Image 1 (cartoon, rainbow, N blue to C red):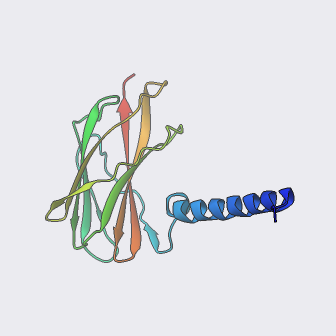
Image 2: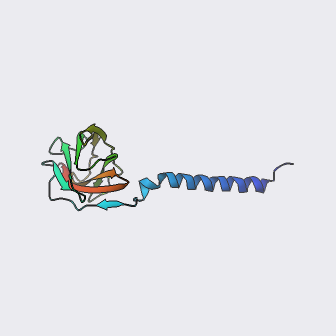
Image 3: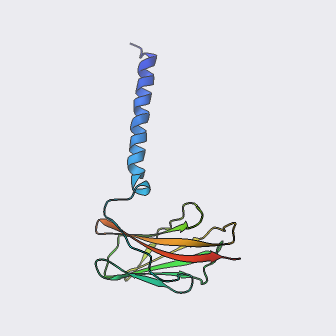
Length: 157
């Protein structure tokens, strides 16, 4: 008994809907914030001049260092996150242009022992020359997420 054309079309549509739902489910942690996100205010610190740190709500502290300084664009920069009083499963640094969308730039850092996480990235060149960036350290620990933003300027005038 041959399958009718409408049954094949209906089956293809159903399969496509299931596939879209599965892809959406798998990508949702990257698009929507997870429950348990704790976002801290930016500390008063200039990341382009010195390493910066923030006190964590559950105790301990988080430090971010970016080298070289001043922070260049179109040149690799080294990232170091140090955590004290918190054991993290995953650490990323999300870079976002404050005045202009500069695209998705979120390197995942590698554990380096003793609460240290290291990585590298390159900031894109802004057409205006110098711009303000926000580097948000994203830490996954104990089933929750912590977001700590740091601001700095990079580029040239």
